[in-house]
Every structure is written in structure tokens, then in C-alpha cells.
Amino acid sequence: MSFTPNPRQLALIKIALFAICLLPLAPLLHAAWSGNFGPNPVEYVQRWTGTWTINLLVITLCVTPLRVISGLPWLTRLRRMLGLFCFFYALLHFLAFIGFDHEFAVDAIARDIFKRPFVTAGFAAFVLLLPLAASSNQWAIRRLGGRRWQELHRSIYPLAIIACVHYFWLVKATALLWPLAYAIAVTLLLGWRVRERQRKAIPVPQSGIAKSGAAKPLKFFSQRPK
View 1 (cartoon, rainbow, N blue to C red):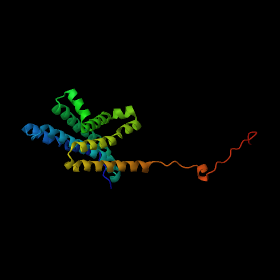
View 2 (tube, rainbow, N blue to C red):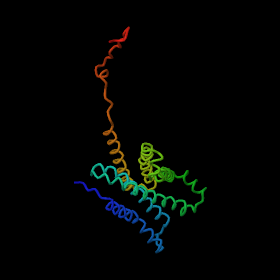
View 3 (cartoon, helix red, strand yellow):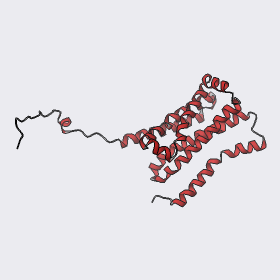
View 4 (cartoon, rainbow, N blue to C red):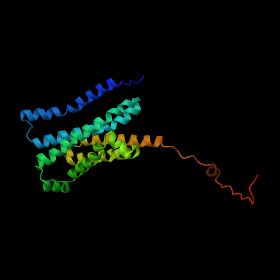
């Protein structure tokens, strides 16, 4: 028998999930309080926020398969929060890049985006994430309509692919294990999604003409038949 939480239980689950999603901030806050970010503070902040951006991106993509496999439709109610926390850490990651790395110098930021491929990929992924975060509300669903809203949010899959490319280009050749793991996870999730769409596709019924392979001639009457 599947578990279906009542409104109070669902609210408690959401509060617990909110607290869990804030946990990755604890090491950053502790490092800021103690002044111990390690030998390379900028790299530490960027790597930590980037890691949790892609972690939450993959977890968000897992919600629909888990809902289908487990038969727990209420899991969908948690997807928006996970997606917004993914954007939150992506925003911190981006702010660390433009603030700590470039001190908000627009020309240096633009030059870096066009010069280094992994920065270009990361910036493209962040730009794709912006409309998803901005439309994660009921007003946007009503404004866009359910169909257009769903089409917009399917861009999370190319976004995830670009994020994996960003990670691959970022690390050294001797540290490809984690980027490879994320790429495999995204590939499996994308494959599952494609298979589900094919499974749910309604086949077009063949007419009797198509089955027989011959079209029946049209009959014309000189006067209206009785």
C-alpha cells in the first residue's frame, strides 16, 4: 500500500527537505566564520557550489522516474523546491565567478566567457536555468498554459547535458570519475524519459483502406438516393 501524506504531513516533509537542501551551505558558512577557505578560497567556493548545483539538478530529474516507479504521485510536489534550490546554488556559483574571480568587471567576465570553453558551457547552462526558475510558479503556468510550460521545462535535459560538458572541460584528465558518473546518470534519466514518451504515444489507427491496400471507387448518383 502506497503512502499518501495528508496536507500536514506533506508540509512537514517540505520543511524537512528545505532544511536538508540548506545543509550544503554549512561548510561555506563555517569557512567564512573561521576564515579558513583553504589555500585557494575562490576555487573552493566555486567547486562546492558547482557540485551542489549539479547534484540537485540530477536529483530534480530523478523525481519523475521515482514517482512512476514507486507509484507515489505526491513526490511531484517536491520537484519545484528541488529545482529552485538547484538554481540557488547555481546563482551562488555564478556570483562566485563574477565576484570573487573577476570582481564584477564586465569586460573581464565577457572575455573569460568567450575565451574558455568550460566557462562558455557553464554560462550557457546558467542562462538556460534562468527561465526555468522564473517560471516555477502558478502564475507562470497560467500565463504560459500547461502545454507551453511543459515544453519550456523540458529544456532541463539539454541544460543537464551542457552542465556535464562544463564539468568535463573543467577538471583535469586525471579527475574524470565524477563528471563521468554525472554524465552516465543524466544519460540514463534522459533515456528513461524518451522511453516513457514512446510508451505513452498513442498509435495512429490504420483505416480499412490502408489495411486492404486498395481504395474503393467513389459512387456518384444522378439523383438523390431514396
